[in-house]
Image (tube, rainbow, N blue to C red; front, side):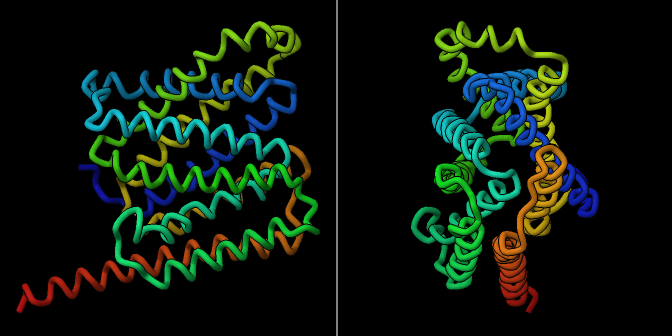
Length: 306
C-alpha cells in the first residue's frame, strides 16, 4: 500500500490538471494546423500506450495486462475514444475554458442517475447539485455568449460520454488502476490504427508541411495524456477521493490560462459566473458527500464501541 500523504496527493492532482489541459491545448493547436481529428487521436493514443507500457511493464510485469473484466475494459476504452473525439470536435469551435467547464457537468450527471444506474440511495442533495450545475452550464452557453452552436452540442455530448465512462469505470474497479490505464490506450490505439490505411494517404501532404513545433505538439498530445493519467493515479493512491474531488475543478484555471496564452481567448464575466456555479456545485456536493460518509462511519462505529 502506498503511504497516505494527502498534501502530496493534492499537488499531484493539480499537476495532472495542467498536464491534461496541455493535452487539450496541443490537440487543438495541431488540428488548427490542418491535421485531421482521427490522425491526431491515433497519435495521441499510440504515444500514450507506448509510454505507459514502457513505464509500467518493467515494474509490474506482463501480468498487469490481464484484466478480470476484459469486456468492460473494451467498453470503457470505446466510450473513452468517442469522448475524446467528441471533446476535440468541441474544441474546434469553442474556447478551451468553456469546453472544459461544460465537461464538469459529467460527475454531476453521474450523481443524479446513481439511484437507477449504480443502485445507490437517492439523495435530494445530489439532484440539487446537478440542477445548479446545469444552470451554470446554461449561463456559459447562453445565446449572447457567442459560442458556436455545434461546439456546444459536441460539448454536451462529451459530458454525457464522460459520465458514462465514469459509470463503466466502477465496473472495472476490480482491476489494478494501471491495468485500466493500459487498456484505455490499447483500445483507442487498435481502433484508430484500423482506420489509418484509409486516412494516412491523404494526410502525407500535410505532414510534409510540418516543422519542429508541429511535431512537438503532436507528440505532446500523447506525452501529456499519459502523464496526466499517471499523475492522477498517483494522487488517488496518496489521498482519499473525497479529499481530492474539489481540487479536480482547478483544471479550469489551467484551461483558461492556456486558452489565453495560446489564442487570446478568455471567458467574459457572465461566463465566469457560470463556470463558478458549475465548479462550486461540484465541489460543494463533493464535500457534502464526504461529510455524510464520515457521519455514517461514526454512526456505525458507535454501537460497536458501546
